Length: 184
Image 1 (cartoon, rainbow, N blue to C red):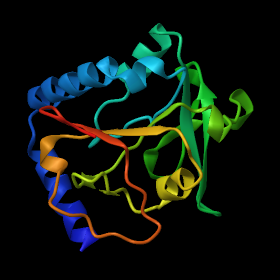
Image 2 (image 1 turned 120 degrees about the vertical axis):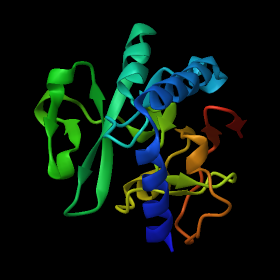
Image 3 (image 1 turned 120 degrees about the horizontal axis):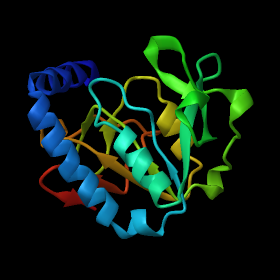
């Protein structure tokens, strides 16, 4: 069931034009930057986006402009663990499995989980209660199980679905921002 939802949503994302994608992404970023959760956050955790994700480079650059600390995820496939590492320049990145960009450990520092104020959580499909289908690794659910700060996800309206199948370990995000609404 999750695999089918993932396939259906990725097809909808692939059908969007580049101009639609940019216009809707800009709208979401503007909403994100107006949220009190963003304004109050000193330390932001966010991924380096891939092709079918809302572009995160403008979010990272806005955070830097506002003198926020940016942390990005480093995954450890052998253990299934993930940590966030401080990130202050694009030359601190390396390309790892599946073409993902991750921080180079020798050039970045691990961020303590309780120092991160806001995690921008990626995903493929979401329901209105904040439950999500990610990319299948379970990294964020494991990480968020011990996280006490705020979470938000940015997604296109077409990524909202009626109900996500849930497992006991699934953790919903606090807030969803789409191009047309904010769901808390």
